[in-house]
Length: 418
Image: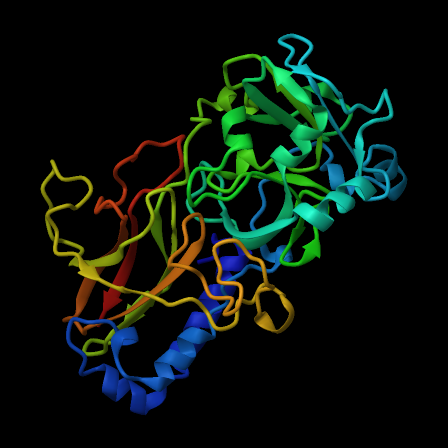
């Protein structure tokens, strides 16, 4: 467990405490369960314990992928002010690409004194701010970095300020990565995605808050991009420049590492809490999380097999194995993440305005917890695996099992029973 991000270790500690908190009486009840999950039983102790799992990640507990030498937010305060890394001095340029210019009527530039400043951004926020839940994940990471409530202005709102006319096919953007141009990290989107949201999708936002608080430098503040359906490299930190271009191709820095720069987030399951050893005759308590990607989530399943059990060589994804269903947990009563009283604010996209409950569950591009109490098994060494079944009835890691477009391999852990 030591290799997990800090925020996942917190989930692990919470889940460990809830299973320990069940006590002897609860254990005797759970030991008699058949092949169903503990969460499905009428067991108030288990329900209360699961409710203690924290859903949103505290900003300081996010896993972090950073670039910059030195890291941009670590400069002295005077340098941060000089380069626009404070709210008081931040400015955002939105201009045409000099190499393949889009036709726009009102370039927003520092040179012309028309760049958007913090006060201007907050003025736009009075009318246009939006909030939504999104899990942040690195394209090549094995586990999510954290789950947040993000707030900002739709990028299209700012784009329209430039009065675009024609020859606009893509938008690319980058942040401050020190004064060395070789350190620049940029990403891009087709302009259609910026201007119009497919049904059920959230807008791409110029983001300034996480979990109700202004972004810290470590989290990409004062302002960053957040692209709801994409991996983290699209949500560029320390945003300062947006380029409107007539070029028809992506020009993301991340492509240099042989990465798929147009990949939607994938659906996959990971373990959070599981015993490494357990006595024979005892049920096996397991909790986990899922990243819910573009194809949604229908089921989470587990597979427990003796370590010496052979498996067909032509079935690398265990499609013929005896997978069993776990329970996808309901939305939390307290959302955590440092939000006051654990309550989400009103106006979160995808949530009912009055009840503040999600319109459906699980939500795409978010986190969902799952749990199962596996019936007791004989002494021996076992492999424990988990996977998802998406809304199209496709089992992880399909339909996109390839690396460099988001990792979604089937996780395996070892279990000793004796």
